[in-house]
Amino acid sequence: MRFPRIVQKEIMENLDPFEIFDLSECSKRARSVARLKNMKEFRLEIHENSIDICGTNLETFAFAFDEAMPPNLDEVMPPLLEKILDVFGYSQVRDFSSGDKSFKLFASISEILMQRKCKIGTLYFTVENVEEKQLKHILDNLNISDFFFLHTKFQFSPNFDYQPIRFPELLCIANSWFGLDQLLTAVKGCLEVKITNSSFTIRDLNEFLGKWMAEEIQNMTAFSISISSDDFLGDSPVLGMTPPIMGRLAWQRRGGIVGACIRYGHLIKSINGQEAVIQLIRDRFSVLFG
Picture (spheres, rainbow, N blue to C red):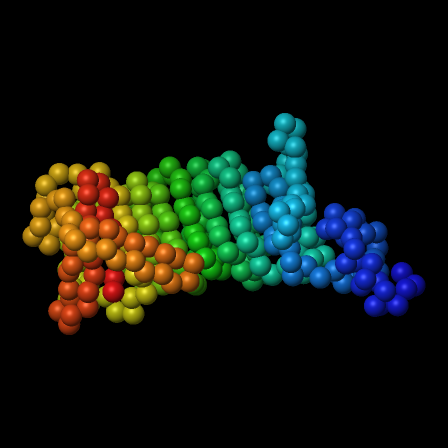
């Protein structure tokens, strides 16, 4: 503690995150010295029963809890996260995985990240028992930049509405709740939307494509959409064409973290000449916009 600041910093750079954290627990003065560690090369990940600090050489420093004898994670993990955020100065989380067991834990951690205005690269949400009103508040206010993956069997009410402050570049929804109205909103914020286990119908598909062809969808950012639905099975026409719908075109596009391609696509155009390729094979529909 008596060394000059420059010497203290050199010492901190030679300690690993575990040692830095232990030092920070000794005293307020020790915590201020521990914060001299440069953490730019380390990324923070939050999982169901661990908080991981990941280095550039595939090294991981996991603040983990034994699955065989777990404590009450709802009580101990959020305070630990706050300490780690304080000590290491993190304002970004690379991956946040909810696990499928505790919505209470997910909500507690989310509140911390929202209060601190942390940026989240990827959110994986797989909790099965959900407090719907609270989940909407969380999803609408978390700052998810790259990828949001929602996969849960929870039956959302028809009026559940996802309206985030910022859409991620890639949105992947595996739930029957996500319908036409949600898609019309998401394509104005995301670059790519993937929907599985959906309740989409051929009628929904025709309505969406009809709006695009009439150029009624303003400020559209999405260039790739894929939807899987059992209702697509059969021979109901899409834009007057009987499935399967294929062509001879091969398109691919990239933007941000997203890349998508369609082989054997069929060309369609909007009223003002904007182009897209579509494909419908069995229960899977894909479209790439030019």
